Image 1 (cartoon, one colour):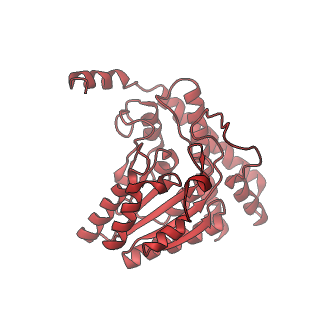
Image 2: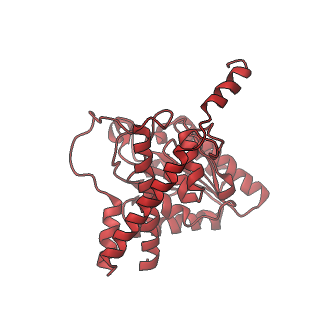
Image 3: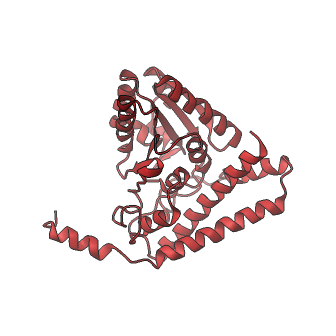
Length: 314
């Protein structure tokens, strides 16, 4: 990978991180309805895969941690922020909220608050692409906890049996909420995928070079063969299950930051540190401007309540 590609990856990752950090502050100020689930530590996985996609021909589904994924797919950051905050002008008019983001016009079909619920939806997108011969593929992002859901295992089987152009991405951060993956998961995740006949690989999701190479190979394979594939990307969850989680279940110790690793890589490739600092500052200022504007937008909660009551409160 050349310096230009890695620098662009770093710039985009910095913005996603700054955006989520600012959303966390907004949540602290009481501006976000419900809990906020951040995906800090997995930015390179999201960006490496989506960089190889062709939205809206290709469609992506995500979990309850999909702020960064929506941005990586090309969704308008202001519309994403407004949706998270429940404001007018959001992706769904502010009625979906933090866990239910969608921008199919850029290839982000939907995120889903039900653990694993987004995976069969991606199979539907893959079947549609195959039936209509669009040349597109579908990609389902999930966490390691979702990998144990029955709907996910059924979708692995369907994808293999129907030869669907579907790429499964498991972001393995070591925890399903507060439960360690080693405690709750039998066997290996790539082993399960291979047992269904899928092309499958495990990768360090915090290594930019390896993540880009693996994404390029697997996206290309699904597109060329029209058959499913599986990536398990191992990352460190930098925060709790949700913003504000005290993490009493988690031992201390160093948490490896992929953005710091990528910065070191760029410096070793002779990138100027002042330029990298400027990229970080620009990302922070941009996120501040966008989310501050979103906070000033009209709250849709009263409208949502009125609609709910008009429907009989069911």
